[in-house]
Length: 181
Ligand code: HEC
Image (cartoon, rainbow, N blue to C red; front, side, top):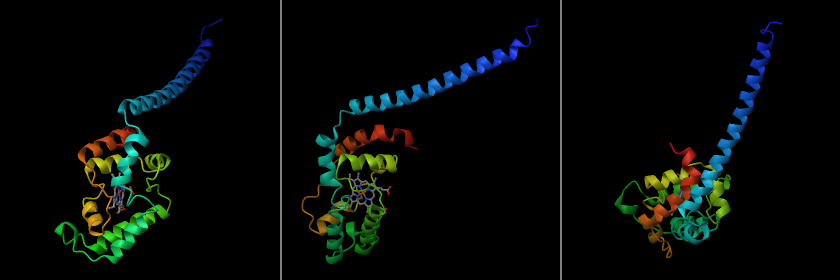
Protein backbone atom coordinates (compact mmCIF):
# COMPACT_ATOMS: atom_id res chain seq x y z
CA UNK A 1 0.00 0.00 0.00
CA UNK A 2 1.31 3.39 -0.92
CA UNK A 3 1.71 6.04 1.75
CA UNK A 4 0.11 8.73 -0.44
CA UNK A 5 -3.56 8.07 0.36
CA UNK A 6 -2.66 8.66 4.00
CA UNK A 7 -1.34 12.15 3.38
CA UNK A 8 -4.64 13.96 3.00
CA UNK A 9 -5.78 12.33 6.23
CA UNK A 10 -2.72 13.54 8.12
CA UNK A 11 -3.25 16.97 6.62
CA UNK A 12 -6.79 16.97 7.93
CA UNK A 13 -5.64 15.84 11.37
CA UNK A 14 -3.05 18.61 11.41
CA UNK A 15 -5.68 21.13 10.39
CA UNK A 16 -8.07 19.95 13.10
CA UNK A 17 -5.31 20.14 15.69
CA UNK A 18 -4.45 23.60 14.51
CA UNK A 19 -8.07 24.76 14.77
CA UNK A 20 -8.37 23.22 18.26
CA UNK A 21 -5.21 24.98 19.44
CA UNK A 22 -6.28 28.24 17.88
CA UNK A 23 -9.64 28.15 19.65
CA UNK A 24 -8.01 27.28 22.91
CA UNK A 25 -5.50 30.09 22.59
CA UNK A 26 -8.32 32.52 21.85
CA UNK A 27 -10.03 31.47 25.06
CA UNK A 28 -6.76 31.82 26.87
CA UNK A 29 -6.28 35.34 25.54
CA UNK A 30 -9.74 36.26 26.78
CA UNK A 31 -9.04 34.74 30.19
CA UNK A 32 -5.73 36.50 30.32
CA UNK A 33 -7.18 39.90 29.45
CA UNK A 34 -9.85 39.45 32.12
CA UNK A 35 -7.25 38.41 34.66
CA UNK A 36 -5.06 41.33 33.65
CA UNK A 37 -7.95 43.73 34.07
CA UNK A 38 -8.75 42.33 37.52
CA UNK A 39 -5.09 42.57 38.50
CA UNK A 40 -4.86 46.14 37.27
CA UNK A 41 -8.00 47.12 39.16
CA UNK A 42 -6.52 45.61 42.28
CA UNK A 43 -3.17 47.16 41.60
CA UNK A 44 -4.67 50.60 40.98
CA UNK A 45 -5.61 50.45 44.67
CA UNK A 46 -8.56 52.73 43.94
CA UNK A 47 -11.94 51.84 45.32
CA UNK A 48 -15.08 53.27 43.74
CA UNK A 49 -17.06 54.04 46.87
CA UNK A 50 -14.16 55.20 48.98
CA UNK A 51 -12.03 57.12 46.48
CA UNK A 52 -13.99 57.80 43.32
CA UNK A 53 -17.56 58.61 44.33
CA UNK A 54 -16.62 61.61 46.53
CA UNK A 55 -14.58 63.14 43.68
CA UNK A 56 -17.35 62.62 41.11
CA UNK A 57 -19.84 64.02 43.58
CA UNK A 58 -17.93 67.23 44.27
CA UNK A 59 -16.35 67.90 40.90
CA UNK A 60 -18.52 66.32 38.18
CA UNK A 61 -21.98 65.81 39.53
CA UNK A 62 -23.59 69.19 39.48
CA UNK A 63 -23.51 68.66 35.70
CA UNK A 64 -23.23 64.86 35.44
CA UNK A 65 -26.34 64.06 37.45
CA UNK A 66 -29.75 63.99 35.79
CA UNK A 67 -31.21 65.17 39.12
CA UNK A 68 -29.13 68.35 39.52
CA UNK A 69 -28.37 69.30 35.90
CA UNK A 70 -31.85 70.86 35.42
CA UNK A 71 -31.16 73.11 38.43
CA UNK A 72 -27.78 74.14 37.00
CA UNK A 73 -29.47 74.93 33.67
CA UNK A 74 -32.25 76.87 35.35
CA UNK A 75 -29.80 78.98 37.33
CA UNK A 76 -27.71 79.70 34.22
CA UNK A 77 -30.91 80.80 32.46
CA UNK A 78 -31.87 83.10 35.33
CA UNK A 79 -28.51 84.58 36.29
CA UNK A 80 -26.90 87.37 34.39
CA UNK A 81 -23.11 87.17 34.21
CA UNK A 82 -20.38 88.28 31.81
CA UNK A 83 -18.47 85.81 29.60
CA UNK A 84 -16.63 83.31 31.79
CA UNK A 85 -12.85 83.73 32.24
CA UNK A 86 -13.14 87.05 30.40
CA UNK A 87 -13.33 85.03 27.18
CA UNK A 88 -15.83 86.62 24.77
CA UNK A 89 -16.46 83.13 23.33
CA UNK A 90 -17.65 81.77 26.66
CA UNK A 91 -20.93 83.61 26.78
CA UNK A 92 -23.74 82.52 29.05
CA UNK A 93 -25.75 81.46 25.96
CA UNK A 94 -22.99 79.27 24.59
CA UNK A 95 -22.32 77.49 27.88
CA UNK A 96 -26.06 77.08 28.35
CA UNK A 97 -26.23 75.38 24.96
CA UNK A 98 -23.47 72.96 26.02
CA UNK A 99 -25.29 72.10 29.23
CA UNK A 100 -28.49 71.53 27.28
CA UNK A 101 -26.58 69.28 24.90
CA UNK A 102 -25.42 67.24 27.89
CA UNK A 103 -28.98 67.01 29.15
CA UNK A 104 -30.19 65.88 25.72
CA UNK A 105 -27.46 63.23 25.58
CA UNK A 106 -28.66 61.87 28.94
CA UNK A 107 -32.26 61.87 27.70
CA UNK A 108 -31.09 59.96 24.63
CA UNK A 109 -29.82 57.29 27.00
CA UNK A 110 -26.09 57.97 27.15
CA UNK A 111 -24.72 57.05 30.60
CA UNK A 112 -23.50 60.54 31.54
CA UNK A 113 -25.16 60.74 34.93
CA UNK A 114 -22.43 59.51 37.28
CA UNK A 115 -24.54 58.88 40.36
CA UNK A 116 -23.41 55.33 41.11
CA UNK A 117 -20.82 52.73 40.21
CA UNK A 118 -23.11 50.90 37.81
CA UNK A 119 -23.68 54.04 35.74
CA UNK A 120 -20.01 54.91 35.63
CA UNK A 121 -19.22 51.40 34.44
CA UNK A 122 -21.98 51.67 31.83
CA UNK A 123 -20.14 54.77 30.69
CA UNK A 124 -16.88 52.81 30.32
CA UNK A 125 -18.75 50.19 28.29
CA UNK A 126 -20.77 52.52 26.04
CA UNK A 127 -18.24 55.30 25.52
CA UNK A 128 -15.02 53.32 25.61
CA UNK A 129 -11.96 55.34 26.52
CA UNK A 130 -13.84 58.68 26.52
CA UNK A 131 -13.60 59.48 30.20
CA UNK A 132 -9.93 58.63 30.35
CA UNK A 133 -9.08 60.70 27.28
CA UNK A 134 -11.05 63.78 28.32
CA UNK A 135 -9.52 63.67 31.80
CA UNK A 136 -6.05 63.19 30.37
CA UNK A 137 -6.46 66.07 27.92
CA UNK A 138 -7.72 68.24 30.76
CA UNK A 139 -10.94 69.18 28.94
CA UNK A 140 -13.22 67.58 31.54
CA UNK A 141 -14.34 69.08 33.83
CA UNK A 142 -14.62 71.94 31.33
CA UNK A 143 -12.16 74.75 32.11
CA UNK A 144 -15.13 77.11 32.31
CA UNK A 145 -16.92 74.87 34.84
CA UNK A 146 -15.64 76.25 38.15
CA UNK A 147 -16.23 79.89 37.27
CA UNK A 148 -19.66 79.17 35.82
CA UNK A 149 -20.74 77.26 38.93
CA UNK A 150 -19.43 80.10 41.10
CA UNK A 151 -21.32 82.63 39.00
CA UNK A 152 -24.60 80.78 39.62
CA UNK A 153 -23.87 80.38 43.34
CA UNK A 154 -23.38 76.59 43.30
CA UNK A 155 -21.76 76.48 46.73
CA UNK A 156 -20.44 72.95 47.10
CA UNK A 157 -18.66 72.56 43.77
CA UNK A 158 -14.98 71.84 44.22
CA UNK A 159 -12.60 72.20 41.26
CA UNK A 160 -10.79 68.96 40.45
CA UNK A 161 -7.23 68.94 41.83
CA UNK A 162 -4.31 67.47 39.89
CA UNK A 163 -4.13 64.63 42.42
CA UNK A 164 -7.82 63.84 42.05
CA UNK A 165 -7.45 63.80 38.28
CA UNK A 166 -4.71 61.18 38.64
CA UNK A 167 -6.93 59.11 40.96
CA UNK A 168 -9.75 59.15 38.39
CA UNK A 169 -7.32 58.26 35.62
CA UNK A 170 -5.97 55.33 37.63
CA UNK A 171 -9.48 54.04 38.17
CA UNK A 172 -10.54 54.45 34.53
CA UNK A 173 -7.36 53.09 32.98
CA UNK A 174 -7.94 49.31 33.17
CA UNK A 175 -11.38 49.80 31.59
CA UNK A 176 -10.05 52.14 28.91
CA UNK A 177 -6.68 50.74 27.90
CA UNK A 178 -7.86 48.60 24.96
CA UNK A 179 -9.56 51.64 23.42
CA UNK A 180 -6.96 54.33 23.90
CA UNK A 181 -5.76 55.76 20.63
C1 HEC B 1 -19.80 72.50 34.45
C2 HEC B 1 -20.40 71.28 34.03
C3 HEC B 1 -19.56 70.03 33.93
C4 HEC B 1 -18.73 69.47 34.87
C5 HEC B 1 -18.43 69.99 36.27
C6 HEC B 1 -18.21 68.25 34.29
N1 HEC B 1 -18.70 68.08 33.01
FE1 HEC B 1 -18.35 66.52 31.76
N2 HEC B 1 -19.54 67.37 30.34
C7 HEC B 1 -20.18 68.60 30.47
C8 HEC B 1 -20.85 68.94 29.23
C9 HEC B 1 -21.65 70.21 28.98
C10 HEC B 1 -20.61 67.87 28.34
C11 HEC B 1 -21.10 67.71 26.92
C12 HEC B 1 -20.22 68.43 26.00
C13 HEC B 1 -20.76 68.39 24.60
O1 HEC B 1 -21.31 67.37 24.19
O2 HEC B 1 -20.61 69.42 23.94
C14 HEC B 1 -19.78 66.90 29.07
C15 HEC B 1 -19.29 65.71 28.54
C16 HEC B 1 -18.49 64.82 29.22
C17 HEC B 1 -17.99 63.59 28.68
C18 HEC B 1 -18.12 63.14 27.24
C19 HEC B 1 -19.33 62.40 26.91
C20 HEC B 1 -19.34 61.99 25.45
O3 HEC B 1 -20.35 62.23 24.82
O4 HEC B 1 -18.37 61.43 24.96
C21 HEC B 1 -17.27 62.97 29.65
C22 HEC B 1 -16.56 61.62 29.57
C23 HEC B 1 -17.29 63.83 30.81
N3 HEC B 1 -18.03 64.94 30.52
C24 HEC B 1 -16.65 63.57 32.01
C25 HEC B 1 -16.61 64.42 33.10
C26 HEC B 1 -15.94 64.11 34.36
C27 HEC B 1 -15.21 62.82 34.65
C28 HEC B 1 -16.12 65.19 35.17
C29 HEC B 1 -15.61 65.40 36.56
C30 HEC B 1 -14.23 65.08 36.84
C31 HEC B 1 -16.91 66.17 34.43
N4 HEC B 1 -17.19 65.66 33.18
C32 HEC B 1 -17.34 67.40 34.93
C33 HEC B 1 -20.22 69.39 31.59
C34 HEC B 1 -19.52 69.15 32.76
